[in-house]
Amino acid sequence: MLTAEQLIAAQKANLAAATDLSKTVMAGFERVVELNMAASKAAFSESFTGLETLLAVKTPQDLAAVSASMGQPVYEKSAAYSRHLVDIATSTSAEFTKAVEGQTADAQAKFASLVDNAAKNAPAGSEAAVAILKSSVSAANNALESVQKAVKQATEVAEANFNSVAATATGAATKATAKKR
Image (cartoon, rainbow, N blue to C red; front, side, top):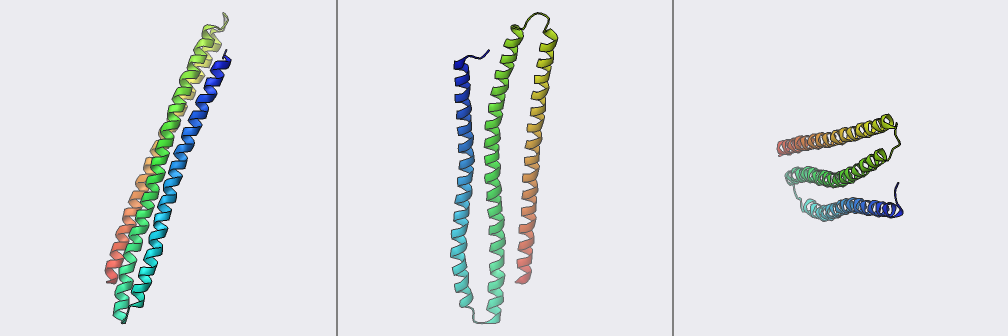
């Protein structure tokens, strides 16, 4: 049976874990906001520079050259922005997952200890019920580990696919811009 002190300690630990997870999520959110602010500032500045360049055009040939030169940076910056966004999401997810896995492992250990204590204090003749309980806990732990591995693999595959698509898109944009020149 849990004592009042054990319950209070568990609640404090849960609050600390929730606080840490919230900080991790907020740090990721801050990084996205910073990325968006930097991208917005750059786009705003570049739009005026582009307008000034277009206003300075005097011949149709100059217009064609300016148009061709403006396309490539947009594709590259868009791909770079997407890579930064994926990096932020991936690193935040990894930090979050690491924290959750640590908390899960701690909770599993405490629960296993609780089951062991209950088994020691179980009345005679309840060995079969204790064995079933221990088997159920073990099966649940195995299932959780399988889910965690599957999530990690899915994240790695998604990141690899994104990197492949981004590289292909950047290459295609480079070729398309080169053809215009």
